[in-house]
Length: 173
Image 1 (tube, rainbow, N blue to C red):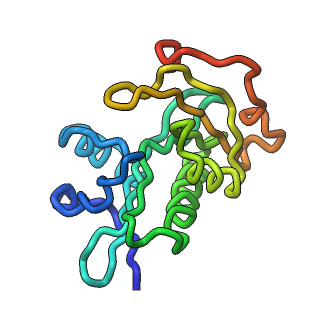
Image 2 (cartoon, rainbow, N blue to C red):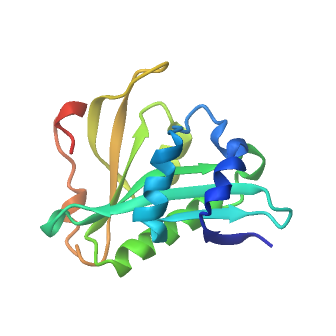
Image 3 (cartoon, one colour):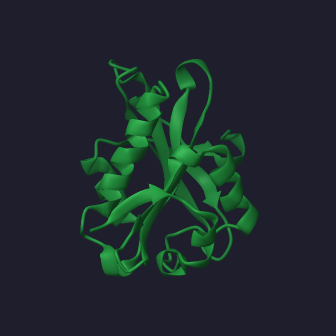
């Protein structure tokens, strides 16, 4: 049976099978530790009974006033464990965590070319709020979609009303 549990520092040495995907952003050791220390309730792994990491979600709570929201920093599922509902389950976990923190919405950034993820997020109730020009840099420079889903604190779904123009990555806080 799959176990959803908090991320442990030793998981940093066991989750390469999850991070090998071309659409998964990888970060430095200190970045992962920062999230684990500051947002432990937002940092979870799905573990197979054999101890293998199947998936993980990393996020945080940020903003102020009606921009107080949960943010999905990373969600990735190992290739061998896709199409099992793990991504949807982990997103639900992060949304519930954000509800418990009284957030207005949850947002995430996704590569515009990652159509599989975009379709999943749409099925989960997310909308494309805006396009962020030049968000991803490096080997594969690319724009991102900022996708959002309102939570119960935003019953009129104001956070999901799309902007009618793109923004540049330097203007995103």
